[in-house]
Length: 118
Image (cartoon, rainbow, N blue to C red; front, side, top):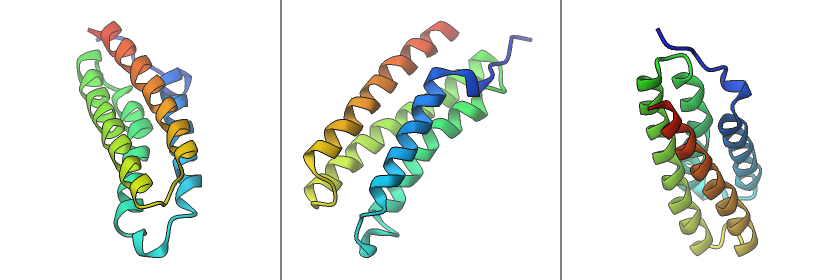
């Protein structure tokens, strides 16, 4: 049985939670008509990132890697949805760039962490 990870101590979990919280703050300003559509999808993606790290951390490294794959997939989905939000003028370019930079950094860190598991 391999070691388990305390997810709260993982930098990838901490940054994913920060991204989810930043996204939540941005969604407050979205129009009401997007509440059950785009903003709901964006919220689910951002919350999926730290949630899958937390869930996977209780598993073996092989299983943890699978949960990290899901979290990574959610991050790429989130990036796409933020581009849609920009196009619909729900966020400005500065907000997009700020979130994109954090997401890209998180992806880099997370892939590095995942490579260390295998």
